[in-house]
Image 1 (cartoon, one colour):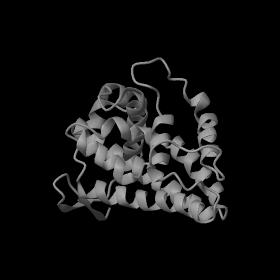
Image 2 (cartoon, one colour):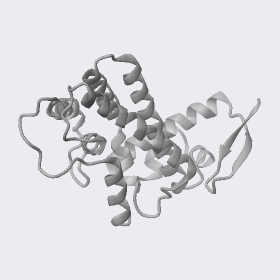
Image 3 (cartoon, helix red, strand yellow):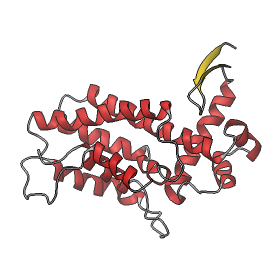
Length: 225
């Protein structure tokens, strides 16, 4: 069966057996279902509902993720890794920098990047080594997408990667406590309106300063979330 190494929630590497193919499939189904549930209901979404969406029993869910904190941790990793892969694909697959940014933004929205927002709060461990590595990888890629367009003049200079990530997060999830679950019908349409607004030359001046990724992290620290 072989083995692999993972980093547990204390940051310690440990050797574990390589999982069976059916176990891997179940884990993927759980993560995808949890991502959808968290987008709709936040990190407090019912675990029973997540198991139902994944088409597995509660016992199977708890075999993979012993508690809510473990599930939230791995959903955040899952979403960041998926979005980073979409960024790599856009950078490698599009020679036109604006087209690469558009391709990434639509793909990141389909990956439900908004699932990260309701989870990055409370007692969530933002400093776990796995999460820091995934965050750094994603930030480097998104920053390169934005700056590549600014270097060649196709993206307006008064925006930053934080502006993009904030917009993607807001556009990829419904407002909490509303009946706006049909947002998917309009997400890509409204996203393209936003992306068109990033193009240079700019028609109007933006108020305030560009939102950087450091700004977003600082805001989370200042608000205790």
